[in-house]
Length: 294
Image (cartoon, rainbow, N blue to C red):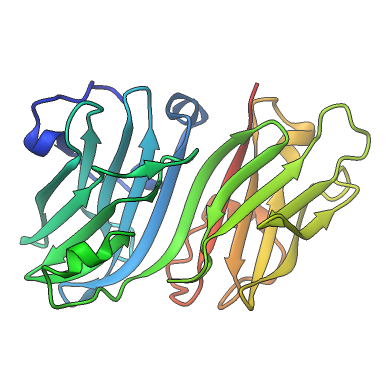
């Protein structure tokens, strides 16, 4: 974060309108990840102004506190509008902001006053972020939806299509995962010890239950396998080459994609570069970049 959040911004936060570039949501350098310690990107597809739009929410954390940005794009990845919200640790974390999309005003609302955070910069509970247009909620995320819907007649019909997160650990890399809208939130753990072992093993757990194991990882450092989550087939891709043979500062990549429209070719190298299944409206993709703590 380049500037210290002002304690005298509107509604107790500092809101900065930023120029839009697609790289802001997709290209993150290792040094930037290390500086912020964690970054979570969530992508939602919804109808706005009669057209399909992508709403990208980036959650981040630094020494000052938790921050987030909201970016509105069309399906070609052209940015239409973006705001950055930088709440201060010492003030009320609630507000709203008007942005222009195709010369029409769209309202962005948020309330992090009672937000509770875990190890991730994305709140666990006690918050909401919403986009509204002429009394209609286009997008609404968080667990305080009832409070917001009291003010509007419309229920948002958006769908979450992607979540991307940078996680850190030594042997265990953990996050929370929801593989379908309004579905169960699971504890997802990836366990792998590659230090000093001749034959490391990869284990994936869902709510403490082992759902996937990869033995002889030195020979199977890239691959894919199928698991079932909430009755839905989920394709798991992994690439741990950097952990085994690359730079000590390198990261492994894991992708979990529901199989509606999923690519079954097993070629993960190309998929890891552009894990953005925008054309697959019925699928969801979770991508984890796992960094080893030094």
